[in-house]
Image (cartoon, rainbow, N blue to C red; front, side, top):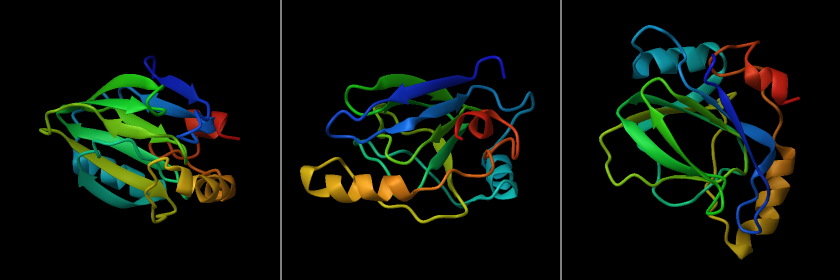
Amino acid sequence: MNNDKTFYFKDDGTIANSHLPVIMYSEVTDAEVNADWFETRFMQNNWTNNWRDIILSYDHFHSNTHEVLAVAYGNVTLQIGGSKGQVIELSVGNVLIIPAGVGHCAISTQTNYQVVGGYPNGGSWDLFTGTADERKQALENISKVSIPTTDPIFGSTGILVELWK
């Protein structure tokens, strides 16, 4: 994984973000992969409640669970970390692991891509957008989210297990 990256985002007053890094795996395998492969891999590593779709086009975050996103086909441009965050390009085979509280949204205008998503232990997710009314509850929820025991791609190894202690 020579192109793996990590990104850190601080609370910007609107989006809580996290002290945990966002992790991006650029190439998870040398072989051609697809949605089934990602979903199976996630399930093997206990990242379930899987879905296949595009990413919401407005800034949002989940306060009660971490999330993994893998691009099965096409490509998408995301903004992560809120409006003051970073723009990244994801393409086929890229995986993004997003800690609870980290803002993300698709800023691409095209929708000819597919992402496979999942959550540690099959957790259900909530949807927050950073309004002042939801901030107190979001921060409380985020503080209660436990660290996963497995990386969604590499199981008991991988950057997540090393960095998310």
